[in-house]
Image (cartoon, rainbow, N blue to C red; front, side, top):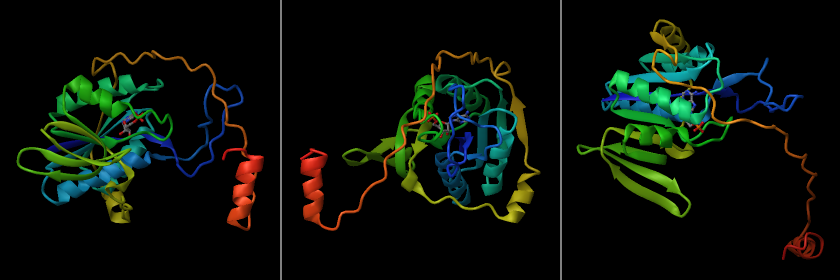
Length: 249
Ligand code: AMP
């Protein structure tokens, strides 16, 4: 089974985000970038499937600027086999990414796509669902457990009311949630080994995909600063504040 893992390069989750002075977006110059945390979980799961013998090959794919290669290398250092970079300097919207990924899925003949449930920059939570629709494949989103069986794949989804268990036919698209696993740190020898692994590069044109934007960002603004909280010393004081100051009960 060939597993494809799409990963996105985003601003590191520990960085404090700053909105650009001209309100066209957030500052990315000289800002630490990293693999989107949900994508790391997807890579970890794919590598575990390879180690367990359920996956034969794990291919990491990222669409973005040339530096996305570093993000692919992180996945290769975690244990993936090969990488594919779809190089584009354009701001890629989820539909464009889904179309690019569809082209790579078809080119590679992948049996399973394991991806993040959302990217922490745009918080879109759209790409996996769009990819499944474009491919006409079953989808399991927000998964916290996955078991491969003879007829397909059984997944546990985290939904508002609790957990939902689905049996999916393969090939399928899965988007992963936080509790699926805890991603490993790449060891130094594996980081060195990853430098030798292959990354093939394509442009959106090579894949026959038009990535021109369909959305226009009008303005990006920072949320208003939050006021400092107060500690109350008893439940009675809390109830009093909620009733008489906040007037919410
Ligand atoms: P989003 O729909 O933007 O919240 O992203 C959901 C998931 O789609 C991410 O966790 C990635 O697995 C994948 N994805 C989004 N953008 C890209 C990209 N530029 N390159 C590769 N994968 C991506």
